[in-house]
Every structure is written in C-alpha cells, then in structure tokens.
Length: 187
Image (cartoon, rainbow, N blue to C red; front, side, top):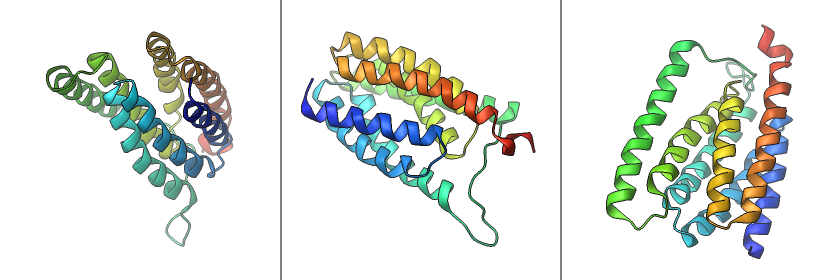
C-alpha cells in the first residue's frame, strides 16, 4: 500500500458516499480520485483500468454538469429507471467495448489480466454513464462489478483498493436502496 493509494481510496469513499446521497460534490472529488488511480493502475499493469480512469475523468465532469445544470429548459437530474430497450442496448455496448479492449490488451500489451480487466472496464463505463444520468440500474450493476473488482485487486495485492471496492459494494447496495425510495422515481 502506498500513500497515493491511501489518499485515492479515502477520496473514493467520500465521492461514492456523496453520490449515494445525491450530492453533486461527489463528482469533483471523484475526479481527483480517478486521476490518482490512473497512476496506481499503470504501476500494477492494469492498463484497461488505467484507461478507464482517464475516461472516468471526463465522465466525472459530465456527471457534475448533469447533476447541477439549471435553466429554463434544463432542470437538475432526477432519479429515473431505464426501459428494457435502453438497458439491453447499453449492456450490448458494454460487451462490445469489453471484447474490443480485451483483444487489444491481450495482443498489444503485457497487461496482467487483459480480458477480465477489459470486461470490468467496459461494463464500468456503462454503470458510470447510468450514474451520471441518475439511472437506478447503475447500482445493481455496480454491486456485481465491485465484487469482481475486489477479487481482482486482491489478486494484484492492492489490498487497500480491494477494501475500498468492498466498501463501494456496500455503498452501491445503499445507493440502490436509497434511489429506489426517491420520490422522483415514482413520477
């Protein structure tokens, strides 16, 4: 465990907790966290996760904008649920990204776990976009992904990050519970 990993993990807990509470400050704090994790994942040769953090940086800005934009024609985001078509399309895109990234990582890099890392990356992108759009389904997807991430990080001896993702799993369960109870979802 490095000091950098400790700081990134602490910021991650704060960012996800704020997101569960629908507080837009989770997004800029998350931005700092993902920038730190970019370096951490590069160092342990989890290149798909490293690239994921770079994309997350952009998605953190997008999420912050989605959650805070206001104006006559734009209201801040409320919790909504995906329809079956949107859900299927998003998951299919996640699978295609996973396959393409996995093939690239397996053939062109010395990635430690190219296929698993790529699958986690592809579907994490889907979950992150859903979270930025305040889609209820982001949370059960995060639960599944976070459990798998815990195992990967234990394998790579990133024990603090594994503990962080175990906590993320619990926060995702809480987020799913809280967002399902949101009055905006009933409308």
